Amino acid sequence: MLRAMYSAASGMEATQTNIDNISHNLANTNTTGFKQRRTQFEDLLYQNLVSPGGNATTATEVPTGLQIGLGTRAVSNGIVFLQGDYVQTGNDFDVAIEGDGFFRVRLADGNTAYTRAGNFHLSRDGIMVTANGDPIEPQITIPTEATNVLIGSDGTVSYNLPGDPNAQQAGQIQLAAFANPAGLNSIGRNLYLPTASSGDAVDGIPGENGLGSLLHKFLESSNVNIVEEMVNLIVSQRAYESNSRVLRAADQMYQELNNLTR
Image 1 (cartoon, helix red, strand yellow):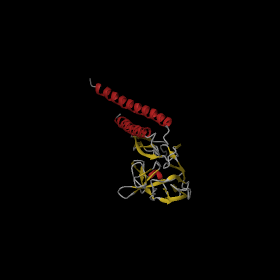
Image 2 (cartoon, one colour; image 1 turned 120 degrees about the vertical axis):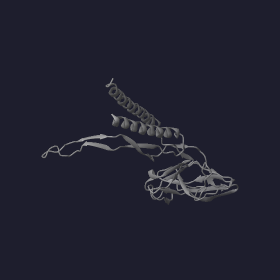
Image 3 (tube, rainbow, N blue to C red; image 1 turned 180 degrees about the horizontal axis):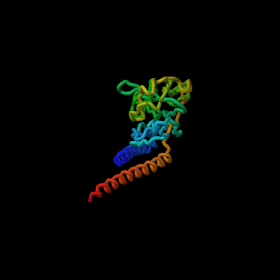
Image 4 (cartoon, rainbow, N blue to C red; image 1 turned 90 degrees about the vertical axis):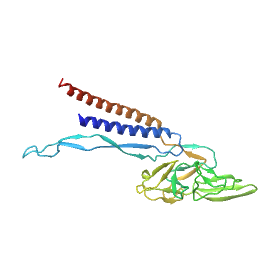
C-alpha cells in the first residue's frame, strides 16, 4: 500500500506537469511563430520481487517474474516544429518561412538568437528589428522615406526612393538550420538559443540547401491545435483524478489496518 501511495503521488505530479504544459500551449495560440511542446513520460524503478528468468527449481525458470513499478515522471516536453498556418497581413515588414529554418537575431549582449516569428519593424534608424527591438542578422537598413519595399523568396530586400524608378537593394535576409531543432533552448520572446543537443547553426540563403523560402507580407501562426490540446487536457484531468482515487483507496486500506486493533 505504501508503494501504491507513492506511485499515485508521482502520477499526480507528472500529470500536473502535463497540464502546465498544455496551459502554456493554449496561452500561446495567437503567438506568431510559436511551436507547441509535447510532454513525454517514463516509468520509474521496479522492485523485483521475483526476477524474470530466475530459477524456480533446479530444472525450471520463472517465465515472467513479479516486478512492481514505482510510478512515473515527466522526462521532457520537446518542441514540435510542425508548420503553422499562414496569415496574410499586407505589412511590408512581415515575412514567413515556408519550410525549415530560423531568422537570426542579434541580442543586446552580442549573442545570436533564432526565431520563427517574422513580424519585423523598422527602428528610428531604419534598421529591421523584431517586436522587441533586436536587429536581424545580417543587418538590413531601409531609408525611412523608402516605398514599395519587397522581400523576395530568397530573402533579397529591395525598395524604391521617391523620384527614382530604379529599385535599390538593402541586403539579404539569411536563415539558419539545426541538426536537432527540438534541442534548442527557449528563452522567451519567441527566441531560441543553440545548445550542445541542437548542434551549431548552419547559415544559408532561403530556398537553398534544404532551407525554406520566404513569403512576403505573410506571418506564420502558432501551430497549436486547440482541439488536440483540449482532448489532452481532458485525458490529463481524468488521469489526475484516477491517481487521486488510488491515493484515497490506499489511505482507506491503512485506516482499516489501524482499526483492526480496536
